[in-house]
Image (cartoon, rainbow, N blue to C red):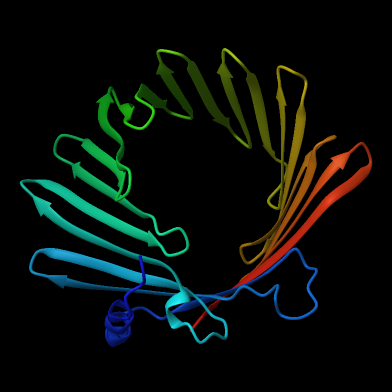
Length: 283
C-alpha cells in the first residue's frame, strides 16, 4: 500500500498542535566508508480532541537525501481515547511502511470493577489475541488473574499474580506448561526465582553501594551470567553483562547518547563484534 502524501500534509499542517520533534541518529556496526552507517530518524507527536474523543497521532520518518518523499516515513500511528458507559476505551493503530503491516490494539478499562480487556489484531490477519485482567484486594494484598487466548495459535493460558509486602509471585499455566516466578526484596538484595518443567534459574541482585549493583544468574544446567551496573551520575550509567563462552554486552548511557557493544565469546576469543551508538536530539 502506497503512503498517502495527503496524510503527510495533514500532519505538517497540524505542526502547531504537535510537540517538539525528536531526532535520533544511530551508527551501526561501525564499519562504513562514508555516511552509510548513519541512520537518522525524526519523530513527531501531537494531540487534539473532537467532542469527548481524545486523539493522539504521529509519524516516525527517516532523514536522508532522496527524491522519493513517500519512502521516508517508517511508521504512522494514532490513538483514539474515550469513555463509554464507565469504561475507558482506547484504540491504537500503527502502520509499518516497510512491511506494509498495520497493527491494532484495543484496550478497555473499568476502574469501578478493576477489570481491563485487551485485543490485539492486524488488518491482514484479523484478531491475534484477547486477554482480560481482574484485580482483587485480599486483606491489603493484591491478586490479579489474567486469562489469555491466542487466536493464531489456538492456545489459551492464565496468569495469576499475587503481591504481599516485598514478595511477588506470578504463575503462568496452560494445558501444556506451567511456570512460576517468585521475586522477593529485602534491604539491598532481591532474589528472583523462575521455575518451569524445562528450566529453573535464580537471580540474586545485590546493591553494593549507591553506585554499584551486581546480579549473578544461574540455571539448573549450570549456565551462569553476571550483570554489573555502575551509575555515573545524572542518570548516566554503564552496564556490562557477561555470559561465559557465549557473549558479552556493554551499554553506556551518557546524557542523550547511548552506546552498545556486543560480542560473542568462545573461551577467551571474541568474535562477531557489533558496535552501535545513538543520540536523541530534542528541538
